[in-house]
Image 1: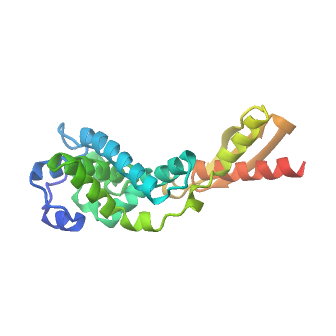
Image 2: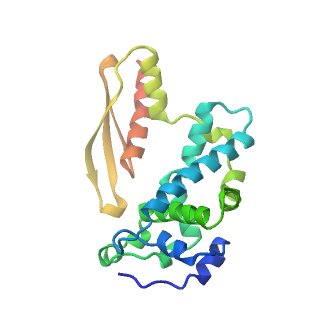
Image 3: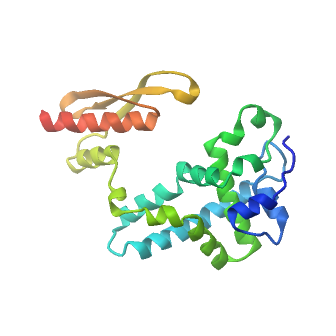
Length: 227
């Protein structure tokens, strides 16, 4: 198990001084390291984070509809966004991990970093109150919120394709991984998208299964439009 870190520099980095330092220590503790881990705090942080971001978006975009607000919220609270913030704040050197996670590079894993970010939000809430936690989240998200625009709320290709088919009572697409290559940290995926409508089959590729599916959806829409 990793040693308990000195948390003074982390508190400076995250711009919050804990009254109860044990809450911060628990927020940094992965289940592989101790029975008193951060998953309950993660649950709490996830809930308050979603609420605060939803309210911030509601105020920032008064003309946005529900779908646009939902997509923007998902963009801001997805694993990638949270792990980016955790990396910027240098969480990795403070994580308390079990030996197995240490050996496998858990301190770099996006899922662990994003879960820890949510756990720290939960810890701040318990250490203070909702209003302070809200102000704290807005502080952490100030740059991401400032850079946000409604153009980023556009529907992704898979959603557009599915809605187009459903609106015309056609069966939904079928996506299937047909092959992949490369090492785990640098894989490329190929996905087949099959539409019963017009008997269309197209192949997309990308650095993740999701990216490959999106690429295949784009190609399927092009096929529909050119047939």
